[in-house]
Amino acid sequence: MLQAPTNALRRSMTNVLQSRSALQGLNASLSQFRAFHVFRDVPSLRNHRRELLLNGKTIGLVPTMGALHNGHLSLARMAAEENAEVFVSIYVNPTQFGVNEDLDSYPKTWDTDIAQLEDLDAELKSKGKGRITTIFAPTSKTMYPTLPPDSTLPGTGSFVTITPLANLLEGKSRPVFFRGVATVCMKLFNIVQAERVYFGQKDVQQTVIIRRMVEDFHLNTQVRIGPTEREADGLAMSSRNVYLGERRRKVGIVLHQALKAAEAAYKMGKRSRGEVMTLAWDVASQMSMEQERLSARDGARFEVDYLSLADPDTLEEVDVVDDGKGAVLSGAIKMMPVEAVRDGEKLGLGDDKVPVRLIDNLILEPLKA
Ligand code: AMP
Image (cartoon, rainbow, N blue to C red):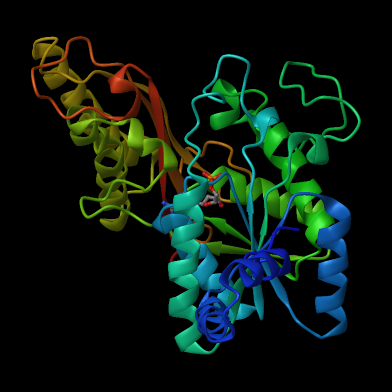
């Protein structure tokens, strides 16, 4: 466990300062500095958790891969409303990245992550409810103690597979993704033993899979889902958005616009797949044609991976939306690297050479009886 400031630091400061009054001043300012408990291995975290259990404290766990933004923070805020202590895990899980995916380039921003959590915790302090107290940032050796993490298919190791859910939608393009997600979440849930675990609506298929895993394996935790946090124009916040320079960022909003068009059709009473989804495809095709017409220095090309209208429990495609169940509208697009850069153009991380997969979804609420 790392804790700042440490007693050792205080002792060595004493030797240096030699002045009792100077030390008193220093101690006073250090006591205002509120460090989180940071754990990198399992036994020390378990001891800590056991103490909390004995003291009757409830725990809400927010699993993340770091590169925190308001989406993550909103989940921590929600967890603090409902639990005495919030644990945030920060771990970029290798087994959910396919061999050709962006594991190495995934943004890692430890200092700003901790600073954001400290700011949020200061806000929570004044509310008098739960606090963020603990960060679990394990190594891969901790998370995969016996065999190295394998993200090939079929893959060697101990995995949790939730089928057929994991093979649909995102799973079609990313065959190991949900096996990795379910496996790492099972590990985190077993380690932390939180009363509640928090996930974002932004990753709708993930929420359905985690719920199914908790039910099927009788895991003793409650799954809570927080709404999707968006930028002012509607783009869903994502750690990957930092790769979008100005040009790709503007065009990336097309996915949200396409889903909104389909949602509008549903709200106007349309129920058949054709009537609802045509509008989404129209928005996407129009934007795609506009970008194709632009020069390499002006256009931002993208490919639509899927636009889906699915059953909220099974995520199977539906031909007609059942009023009693509603449906999940979701989609994924791949923003292609920009082909040529203009002088002075505002580029994203990686100079817009990295393809960026964007996903989003909207829930078509069932009609009230
Ligand atoms: P990640 O770090 O991308 O694995 O995400 C960690 C958690 O934050 C997951 O439960 C995500 O669904 C959630 N999350 C990511 N983006 C958003 C967002 N824009 N709004 C709400 N939750 C989000």
